[in-house]
Amino acid sequence: MVTTLKTVAPGQGTELKEFNMKEGLILFLKVMAVPIIAITVVLILIFTN
Image 1 (cartoon, helix red, strand yellow):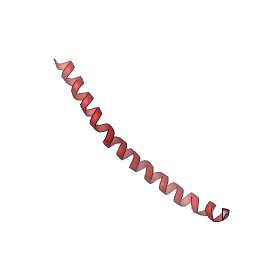
Image 2 (tube, rainbow, N blue to C red):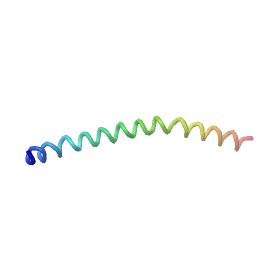
Image 3 (cartoon, helix red, strand yellow):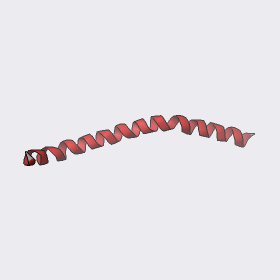
């Protein structure tokens, strides 16, 4: 059991980790994009007035 887990874990573990990181970053950027855009628009309005 331990040896099979050790041999399986490195290949699949890193792939899952990379996939999760990429998906996480995409989701994070999608979520963060809205408040960042809103804040920049507000700042632009404040500075232009």
